Length: 235
Image (tube, rainbow, N blue to C red; front, side):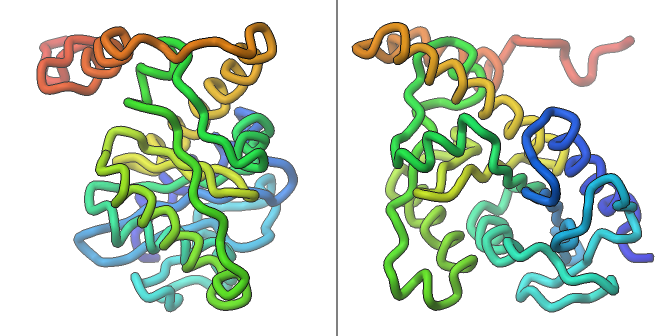
């Protein structure tokens, strides 16, 4: 069986989305990529999570052709592939229809950064794509969804917000691994919920001061990050 470790990592990421309450029934999907092999592992389409095994994870190439697996890959495969092609440091993608993040996507509004929880993970608002045109929807819909995400980040010129809201649809998140992508999806839902409550309490709430936003993001992700333990520190 090809890419057994990656298959297991992708299965674990999918099950994490379930454990954290981010998906219902067969909604959502997570994937991972082996850059060395040029292959992607992704959840099969419409298969219940409770019966899924690593052997069910589908392996495709970067053109979307199935290389190994008897099941059809997720219908969102083409969107995942566009993200992998556009963001070379991405190793995993997670897509959910989690309630609060999806509500922001349906409202077609970016999620502002109101506090340090958001700033710890996203260096800026979580952006929203432009709505797809009728022609894009009628054509290769999932590929056009990925292209809309990539166009948006070309305009924003940032690699410090590993998440996006697709207008009228739902969020996609990514990371260095499938596990990290799922982790970012969990955090995204949390900050989406807090932002919703914040504007419910104070509709005119101001975004977090940029200096504090920068401090919290860079202490975890900057060149001189000091949050947590050194990765090469002796145990």
